[in-house]
Length: 212
Image (cartoon, rainbow, N blue to C red; front, side):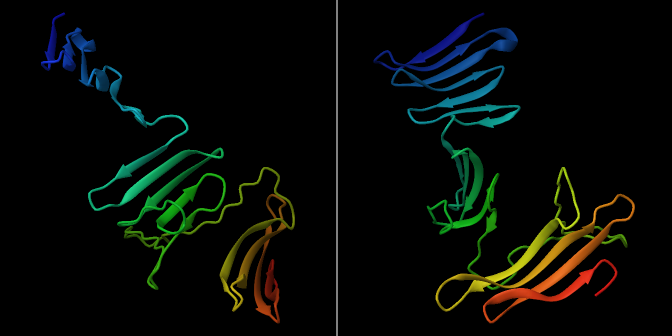
C-alpha cells in the first residue's frame, strides 16, 4: 500500500496515513509522540497521563485511574474503576469539582451505599411510566436475592432518617418486610411499622401473615 506523511519543518511527524486496504491506519503525533491513532480495532487517544481506547465494545480508560466525561455546561460524569476494589460512578453538578458527597448529584456504588443528593425540597427521585394500559406501573421492588431463604429473614427496610439536636443521624420511623414462612407453595410474609419513642425504635404495628 501507499503512505502519506505530513511533517513540520523540524522533522516531527504530524500526520501519517498508511494504506493497508481494510486495515489502514492513521497516526497523529505531537512533538514526535503519538497522541492519536486509528486501526481496525478503533481509536486510541494517548497523552502523558491518560490512555483511552474507543472501539465498538465501548470506551476503555487506563487501569487504576478515574475516567471523566465533561460536558460544556460543567456537568461531569466521573467513573472510578479502582476505588479500593469498588467501582463507582459519580455525576457532579454544575461548577462543582468534588466527586464526593459535597458536590455529587448522585453516586452509584458497586459494593456500598448508592446515593442521590439534593439541596431542594422538591421530589428527589421519580419513577415514571408512560404505559397506557390498566396494569400497575411503575413498580418499586426491594428484592432480597438470597441463595438460602429462611423463615424470619428480613427482606428490606424503608427508613425515615434525620438528625437529632446533637447532630446524630437518627431513624425516626421504619418499615420492614420479613419472611414469616419460606415454604414453597405456602409462603407467609410479615410487615412491621416501627417509630421512635423515648429514644427507642420499637414495633407499633405488625401485620403477621394474615393477622394484625
